[in-house]
Length: 158
Image 1 (tube, rainbow, N blue to C red):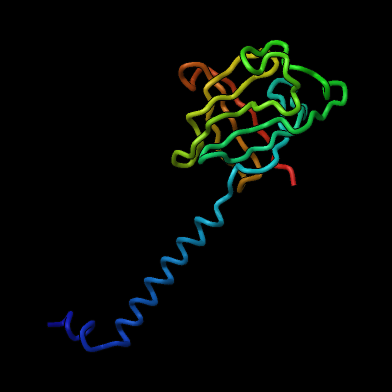
Image 2: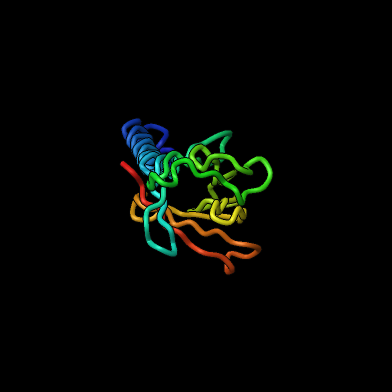
């Protein structure tokens, strides 16, 4: 009976409930839309030396994320080729090389893909997550279990 009185005859109450529901729904959509994304240009930083090495552009293709070397920050390395790479990447120019492949969002991180270390030509499993409101990207390349690997932090370029 009480339910009939509130929702059956009282159009104001029904409109208010509908309005509150729409506002809550819009609020959740806004927070999802404001969530940072890894898509964009990133400065790679060598985890051993701490020096910036290059720029990698992360892009989406068929619902997965990929990363391609866009620029070397050392002019001496601008024409370098991936001599230690195997397969299709063998002796390809570093600039233009896809080094991050098939990453998918899983919870608050991205995983399921691979990352190439052009220094030794090895391909590792990879996972990464955004830090500092999307200004940093913490990557982990590993063999087998993520316990056996190493991290790099990339910085978003403006």
